[in-house]
Length: 116
Image 1 (spheres, helix red, strand yellow):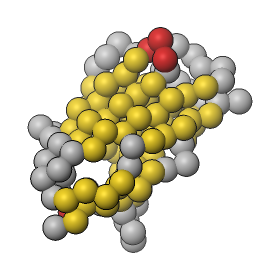
Image 2 (cartoon, helix red, strand yellow):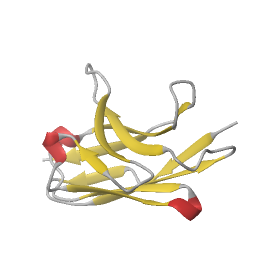
Image 3 (cartoon, one colour):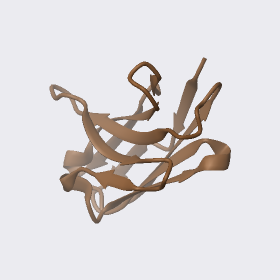
Image 4 (tube, helix red, strand yellow):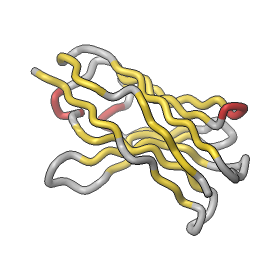
């Protein structure tokens, strides 16, 4: 059983920063990809950023230059540093870890609200 526990969401003014954390516990294959997705009201869930075991990263165009994803392999933890936040970044942010199509796990989500 794999569980993901997220923290770090909240309310911030536009231009501010937040740091999200997600720790995975359970039987986790070391060569996994960890990432963050978000879902705003009335919209589909979308990729924000992903980091592979080899530390390669991929970002949504909308967050490039503002968000940074990183991971601590020893702690099975992934971080998302979000700077220069905009109201359009408001969403529920979900942590994800996967290594096959079957082994694909989600956190419970954490709310990020950016006021203008």
